[in-house]
Length: 315
Length: 283
Image 1 (cartoon, rainbow over the protein chains, first blue to last red):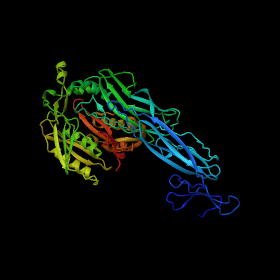
Image 2 (image 1 turned 135 degrees about the horizontal axis):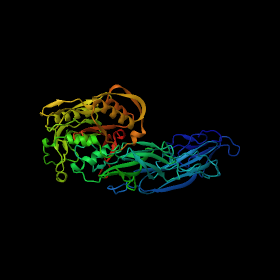
Image 3 (image 1 turned 30 degrees about the vertical axis):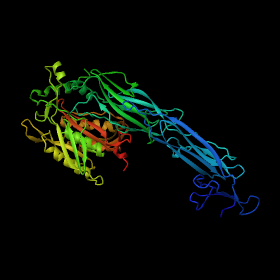
Image 4 (image 1 turned 180 degrees about the horizontal axis):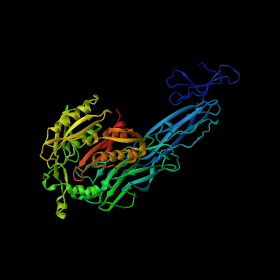
């Protein structure tokens, strides 16, 4: 092995070369051989005196959490798309040097997840170590901190992990264009900061329209349009996004339903249902909503998830 | 009186329903059925607008982005009485309501070669040709717009004598729109208001999901530009694959336009289906 004095090397994953752990480059300890870590002298004044880091590098930490996913009726089952949780351990040697090992654990909710990362270090060696759950490559976590070694095998999380939301609270804001409704959402849990991130809607399934009749020109199977909102932008405050504007507005279509629907056999009140899935930063859905507009013979009501509704708008 | 839209009521009264055809006993399909048989695809539709129902099914089957503009049928040859018997008993003297006189439509065409960029146009062309050979209302043409979008557009309807007569599609109307920064929703409403002034025809924007159009700003306009072109520019500004259906309600009378996101229906892996926007479909 040829190396520089006072540098530490790890045999890389392919076994064909040595990763220098001094400075910016890092090495995947678990992917290669964790025991094949060598320091280059001097250890006691001698030059080019290679020293095996006999205790290798060792540290371990486990992260876990849980998630539930709700789907509105008639789709009663819980469907969570796959999340990947990655725990990343890092080691460093010398000023600014880092090494890393990562384990990605795919997980399908609902339920609990866990991920463990291990880095092996020894205080008697020249290594220091630290460890974190790195969300950078993980759907559920985001690494926003700068990691460094504090020495002696201790570990530090320089900043708390940044999680994706697992639900949202909906608030009715007001009517839009007479008969449509506007809603403002707050992402949960509120212990995290989602500002500046994006939320995008999609329709996983076709909706239904009881107010429709054949030849009416309305959508028989309505869907959302895949709007994207930036959290804490425009009308929305901290951890909020919106408005989400739903329902036939301007009263013209509602008038059409009220004045022609019954003659076409539409029963009042009639309901329009739209299914809406919410994605955070383009990753898997964290919430499924049911958007509803109910047209009565003299009133209109708009709801998001059945429990947050406008009043009955006289029309 | 806020809920009473005078144009609506007045329009209904103008319809001479006594002369309209009686609705045959029909079992309309909720959705057109698509069958794959070797190298052939068969589409079976049964609807008052069966060509639209067939196209709607093909949109979801293949993720095609085809716009639709109904032929504005108005005569007794293209409309049938659609008045509910229950409602008729309760309202014996009031004007009834109609719907387009379409019914069953079946078409077969070669299985589209998904690697052929022209497959969509070829298949829809065949579909339209087959439709125009039936007795269903309206005659249609497939147009490829300069932006590459396809639109099936009604160009002929039956007049009072039953003879086919050519009509000018309402979205062909040139209009002038002042260039300004607006939301897409405001722009669409302005296009329709301008179009109404130019043609005297009522256009109703039947939108259920407004957020994308409210959240997107656009700056378009110009002199004597076809309304369709402006509309497509407004939709394109959302950077999502928006498609539209322009239908005609003869009882009002009014054009009713609704929009949706072009999507493909895919297996969800657990026995059901899920929708995927066509700009997010994995190759």
